[in-house]
Image 1 (tube, one colour):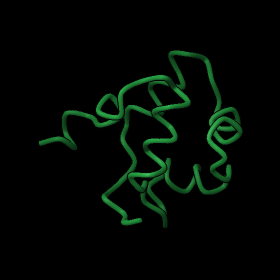
Image 2 (cartoon, rainbow, N blue to C red):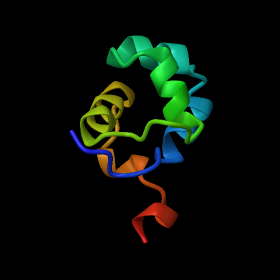
Image 3 (cartoon, rainbow, N blue to C red):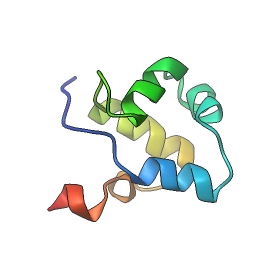
Length: 73
């Protein structure tokens, strides 16, 4: 899978408003916790389309919700 870009800002916002944690997201998606944190902090890893689909499924949102307006432009 490719690396389409930095993580959508919407993930952190969704977790915050739903009072969920990155640990919960890791467990719900099967994505390693440390990897999610690296993605969240725009460090060494970028969010793949596959991971975005897993996250959207876990949060029960359409994948397009995860993309901020700034990134869509």
